[in-house]
Length: 207
Image (cartoon, rainbow, N blue to C red; front, side):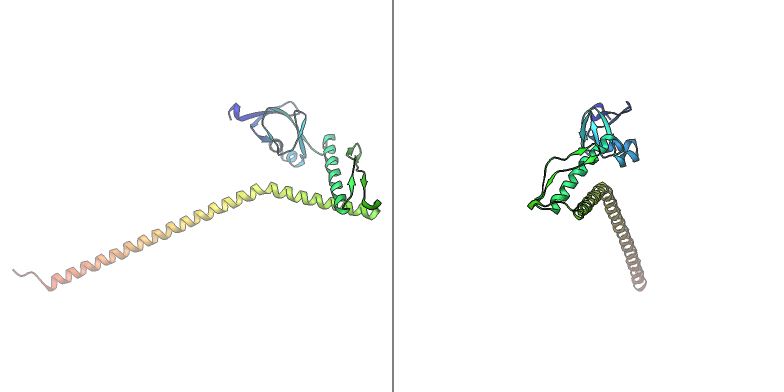
């Protein structure tokens, strides 16, 4: 890997590694360990928040953020607050929300429901169920996205295997046809020789 094609990634422990230009934080995490790759929820490059799939195209100090860290908990609370807001606006069309980001002990949003409605205990249970359903849907979509390269690779290999088997079958059939033609030609040649010998025997040359 030439220097022009590489970026230097410095990790929180002070160690550094070279990666291809355009490496993502997710790929950096995977190169460190499977557990870190599984737990990663976001990253920081030179102190700036970045998504795990964002390419890193310059030397940078990279931190992989997991839920076990204070920053990771902040990310989870922030994203969960948005999920809650989406769930409420779906369940209560016309609902509006104002301030309410993540806080030290969790997250919240202030909502204004249409018609002066207020939340009941049953509403809170419905909101929680809707939030879970959204999270599960997002998790399925994420897994499908992660598995897509593997499925595409399997399809590619299967197509190559089928193409190879077709070529081998075609070559085998062509060889068998060629052998049959050679046998048929040899039989015809042998029969022609017998006919010539019979004709010579029936009509000997007289001196």
